[in-house]
Length: 332
Image (cartoon, rainbow, N blue to C red):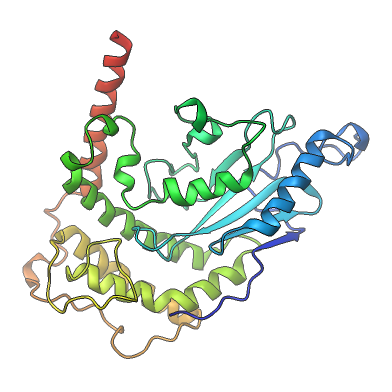
């Protein structure tokens, strides 16, 4: 198991210069402070945000970290750890949040710090987050933002549990009408893609960590680096289905899961880069994780360009299904 990470889960900081919404809601220095709902301590919006701070300070799960800003109470930044049992395990995912001037009548704005990577149907490369709770996606009434009940804590837990889940392929709209069994194979292929791109995001975070979370990023990967590398090896060798690596269960020595050649290619490229990055942040990597060793691999297939990117096929088919579903709904 990894070391205990000494990093406050909730804290108030001052530097918001790299926050995505730093320019949003910003007032001129000559503005009347009493008319600003974010600085007037008597305003309903200010009091509600302070209530949110208190909830977060005392109720955050161990795998979610939050920073709020002393001079910009309308801004918040959260770092979510990908949980075990998903293709996002051991990853870190950063979200910038901004409260609207009429909060909580309308949900907060949220931006995913993607580094240009597409890792989930609900998280776009441009940072857009599609989620019913913030009214950026359709959903039942009880899934929508409710000013009387919804909170930032609920939003963060939803991102971790509902978006960064075990089968993100099924996050795409339209598939629920067909059931999971019909698309199990495609879902597993998408998990390969999601894990590989989660690994890419780890490298991006280590190269350019978000402000006020530099210490967490280094400490987390110093602690979890070895687990990530062992998972890469076990997945590439088919010992464990992608997303299901666990330090508590000893995987079989031989292959029992089918792994795509594309995934092996990804691991050949990413593994040495991850190893080097984890070493630089102080990870203790004992003998046995220095190299990626894929058993029974045919050298002629290594780096073969004939394999198309799985996710393009998957996403393309999802889009067609969703478009057809929408047409059907319109006709009805």
